[in-house]
Each structure stands twice: as C-alpha cells, then as structure tokens.
Image (cartoon, rainbow, N blue to C red; front, side, top):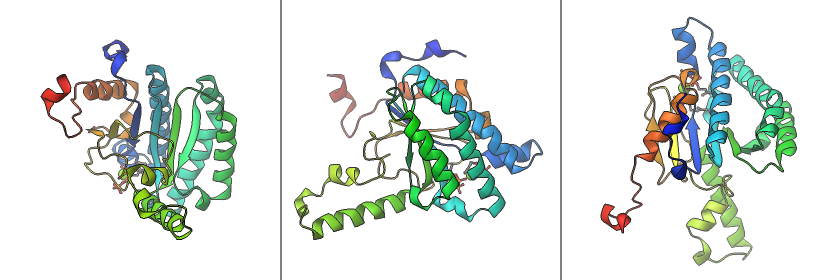
Length: 246
Ligand code: IPE
Ligand code: IPE
Ligand code: MG
C-alpha cells in the first residue's frame, strides 16, 4: 500500500461512497449474493480504517437505500443482519480509532433490532473526536428533501420564519446531514454512472470518481488511488482558473 503518494495538505474533508456491485461480484465468483455482501462489509471496514488513518473527517457509506426494500425479502433480511453485525462487532475498533458513528436516513422506520444495535453503537461512540462515520441507512435523497420542505412549511406556518429566511443554509439545516459539510469527493464503484437517489442536494459541487471495480474489490489501495485522483482536480466553484491562482 502506497500511502505516501497522498498530499497530506489536500485531504478531502468529506468522502461519500456508493458501495455498489456486491451481487455481481458474487455472481462472478459463482456464489450467492449474500457472500458478495459479506465481502462488501470487509471493504467497508478497510475503507473506514484507511480514511480515518489519512485524516478524512467525514466518511459517508451508502449501505441501504429506500428503494432497496424492493429487493427479495431474504436479501433485505440478510443485509439488515450484516448491518447489525457491522456496528456491533466493530464497536471496539471504532472506539479504538476514535471514530464517531452517525446515521442518515429514515431511522424511525427501520426494524426495531436494527435501531437498537445502531443506537447502542451511536451512544458508545458519541464522545469520540476523530473521524465521523456516517452510514446512510434507509436513505433516499428525495425523501430527505421532502421532509425538509415539510419542516420549513411548518416553521413558516408557526411564524417561526419568514419567506426571506428560506435560503441554502436553512434548507441544508433541515436535512438529515445538517451537521455535516457537503462531500468533497463522491466515489461510486461497479462501473455504474448514476447517483441512485444519494445526497442530491449535498453533491452540487462534489468531485465524482467512478471505479469499474465491484465494491468487494475496492480496498485500501483503491481508496488511496481515488484520493490521489481527487487531489489532481481543480475545484473552481464557478470561477475561472486564473482567479483561483491569485
Ligand atoms: C451494493 O451491491 C449493496 C447494496 C445496494 C445494498 P448490490 O447488491 O447492489 O450489487 P449489484 O449491483 O447487484 O451487483
Ligand atoms: C445504490 O445501489 C444503493 C446502495 C449502494 C445502498 P443500488 O444497487 O441499489 O443502485 P441501482 O438500483 O443500481 O441504481
Ligand atoms: Mg447495485
């Protein structure tokens, strides 16, 4: 692993990942889809370790979308089981690495046993001051934005805000990502070039990185390569290149 190729002065503050391709990885290896998800969980663990090691402050992993409920019941069930296992078995390591766990998504509508395990790990890691690991669980960007709109409408109705108070900042504050800066880098694996209802508002100016690899094959080295690629980019935010060099 070549960690030295990273420019330590240009570490993205927030990296978000669409972990895709577990099923196709399993198929390629003539295994059940579940085996792909298990291998994918290993990648999630490795990427969490390396992100924390290089000094990423926020890492968001898209683990289960609102649309994923439409998968066969046994697959949904095994994914929930792996999630519980992930936050329980890795709890000591999270604490050792000073990582704080957070969830974004529709938490209330998750099965009780998932909520309980996740909540226990959130509480156990709440005072950690290193990286924040955010798991997008039962997450959908459109759902999140509709909820934000409802909450703003409510505040307006109660005369807590005026129309002029509604701006980028207020809207961001009503999202489940309210305390998290926007991602600097968004990674998607498995050769798909789409966003799949992930952080639509928050990725307005994120750098996008697409990998052809299936998620179980995306490990520490591949994460480092994505960071190095990110570091070569010029983020202009609407300005010209020469303005940035002044
Ligand atoms: C990503 O892998 C895991 C989840 C979406 C939960 P997939 O299960 O989507 O794998 P493919 O896309 O079918 O290969
Ligand atoms: C996106 O992957 C969701 C997660 C990684 C959790 P999907 O496999 O569900 O996305 P689509 O259906 O291919 O767009
Ligand atoms: Mg997929």
